[in-house]
Structures are given as C-alpha cells and as structure tokens.
Image (cartoon, rainbow, N blue to C red):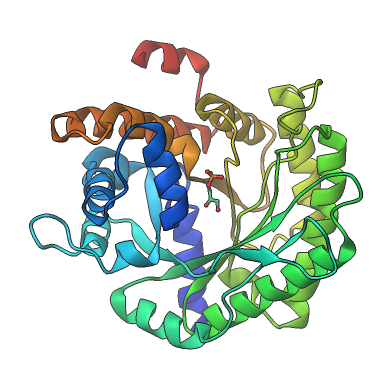
Length: 341
Ligand code: 13P
C-alpha cells in the first residue's frame, strides 16, 4: 500500500471549489429517475445520459473532482467507442466506483438494513483498479423511526464499512465511507444530530480497529437536518451550525475530506447548506459535495431522453456544478441562481 498516493488522491477529491458527481445509481434507482422524465431505462439510454454528463467540459474540468460510477458504466463505451471512463480522465476528474451490492433485511432487527457485497470484493477491486478506478464507495443506510436505529444495525453496518475500507486501501483505492442516516422520517434535527453522532462514532471506532488509515479515506455523511416530514424545519444556519459542530466532535482532523450526500434535499437547499458551513470556517478537513440527486435532477429534466436536448442538459448540469463549486468555497449567493433562471 502506498499511503502517500492514497492521501494525494483523497486530497484531490476534495480540492477547494471542486466536488464529486455521484452518478452511481444502480439499475433500479436509475429506472426510477428515468421513469420520472418518461425515458425508458435501456442500456443505450443510460449510456447516452451519462455520456452527456461526462462530456460537459466546463463542469467536469472546473468543478468536478471525481465521478462515482456504477459497474455497468465503468465497462461502457461512448457512442464513438471511447470508454466512458476515459472521458472522465480526459476532463481531469478522477474515476471512482460503487462497490457495495445494496442492502438486505437485517435479521432480528425489524425494519433495519445491512449493506452487502464483501464477498469477493478484493478480486473486484483489483479489476476496477486495472480499469482506472482510483476510489470507491460503499453506502450504509440507517433509518430513524420509532425504536430504531438499534445499536445492532449501527454496529454491523460500521463493521462492514470498515471491512470494505481496509480492502480498498490494500488494493490502492481510496474508500469513500458513507454511513447515511436517512432524512425520510418526521424526526427533528436534534434527533438526527444524536443518531448521526452515534453512527459516526461507531464507524470511526471500527475504522481504527480494522487499521484503516484515516489519511487515505474520504467520509461521505448526511448533514444534521430535520426529517422531511417533520413539521418544524431547521433553518439553513441551524443545519450548518449543528452539522459542523457534530463533524468537529466526531471526525478526526487526519481525514483529508468530507463530501456530503444530498439525501433528498432540493438542489438549492443542498447548495445553501454547504455554503453556510464554509462561512463557519476555518475547518479541519476539506468540505465539499458528493451529490447525486442535487446535481442531476435539473439536467435529467432538461435532457428528457432527447438527443436535441443534450446541450440544454449539459447547461443545467454545468450550472448546478458551478453553484456547488462556489458553495464549496463559501462564495455562493442565491442571487446567482436567479440570474441563471
Ligand atoms: P444523493 O446525493 O442523491 O443522496 O446521492 C448520493 C449518493 O451517492 C448516495 O449514495
């Protein structure tokens, strides 16, 4: 294992003003996104859509540090025969790969999930490295509800995250460690804060036990935020203040960077929250975005599966990438959104 190189990649993934495009929707998830814009989820349509994003030159070269791919995409070629992963490399961004294999019901813990995919992971990582992937992602899912999460669910998911992260580093791949506490419930921001704190503490405890080198990883957490169905929605300032307080308490400064998931926040909320956090700096780690929906909802709508809309889709993607790139430096203002609209 070359630690200097792992650290170099992790640091580049959270370079100032840049963030990660999470384009690693599984076949089931991308079908849901395509259903919403009336596009059939065929292999060709998935390729065309992702090719559109990766060929958006301005966005990719100025604001995107890395792209998380799904297994199908990393082996796919663009229409002209260029491997899609080459388009990413040519733009200057780093290719990454989602390596978990989704979730299964956790026995004895009704309503809770465990992420699977550790079997044969070492062999898969070797193939992905040869193809050009330099980082990976594994997402654990923790739900908040009546009587959950259990400490069992938190522990087994943290254990699997650390097993994955250690295997990645041994394969010279930077692990993105993603313990996602969902924002789907009616809980308030303080309950999210408390649960996320427990999840982060357990995750870092497992990472240490399994000898993961903190300097060679990136954390992808949720923000401390109100549940979507909570009657009392916390303000942008409260989300920023509580998220930074929580991360400072739980995430060692040895970690080069933190890249948030958007988790169902609106495009502009996700941008405003990241921006407000940078106003609270200086911060001990790089802090940026690793958004899926908050970067792609607008370009998906603009594209809607039509070849004649590719330029419009790329414009919509470039706009969101630029807004988030500015937010990652605390330089975003809502008036910039209005000007573009
Ligand atoms: P969202 O930003 O849509 O939450 O997706 C990020 C991601 O990679 C979730 O695993």
